[in-house]
Structure formats: C-alpha cells, structure tokens
Image (cartoon, rainbow, N blue to C red; front, side):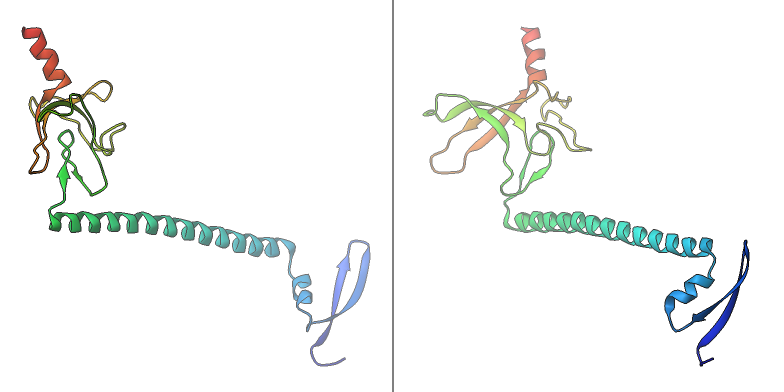
Length: 180
C-alpha cells in the first residue's frame, strides 16, 4: 500500500465487501460522507448565493434611487443660487429648469392682458405625488384633480418678463357665480 492510499471496508445489505479508495481523488472524500450532509452543504451554498444576489440587486437599486435624488437636489440648489426657481401656485413645489406648468392661455394673443387657466405642474397634475396638496392660493380650499384649475390673468409686457396673477380657482368661481 502506498502513502495516501487506504483500504475502506463497506457493509452492504446483501453482504460484506471491500473497496480500495485513493484519497488523492477529491471525489473519494464525498463518497465517505452521508448523503444528507452533502445535500445540506449544497443547500447552504445555494441559499448563500441567493442571498448575495438579492443583496446585490437591492444595493444597486437603492444606490440608483439615492444618486438620482442627490442629482435632483444638486440641480435644485444650483437653480436656487441662480434665481431660476419658480413655484407652482397650486402645490407650492419649486420647479427646476425644464419643468413646465400645465396651463392654457386664451385668445386674443395681441392684447397685453389675457385670461388663462392653470392645471398644475408635473408634481401635482395629472397625478399628484405622495404628500402633495393642491390648494387654491386665494380661498385655501382643495382644488379637485378632475376638472379643477386655477384662473389667472397673464400680462404680456413688451420690455419685461411675462407676469401672472392668480384670481381664484374653479371652486372660487362656483361660489362667486352662486352669489350673483
């Protein structure tokens, strides 16, 4: 018998037998291990791989959300420093450059004072973000999402920026029409 080789004796149901095994071969070690231990180790390794994969996916998703929020906050700070922030009259959220109000301006276009309606901004219209309240700046009541809007006057100045004055909401107008 050489070094590293051993003789193992196995008893089978049908009788006794002997087998010569070379322990240099890694598969020989697994033959001496009971099956349930082998399956437990295999199950533990698979479970560990699944947990690592789940952690990696969550880490990547959280990192993406966090970096997007950080980028948005940086853009908001930069716009505030330059004086470019505009506030939505319905939900009071500061709009970044590129985020536009959703509104309608009615004709005639050649006058300096025009009637307009404001439906909201990307944060409150067509579907409000969680925690955003659509309130009228004149009466303070909740402006409904379906059919609700602000009424305003748009002043087109030739020498300066356009100016908007909010005169009420669809709810204020119903109340004023009922009084008349």
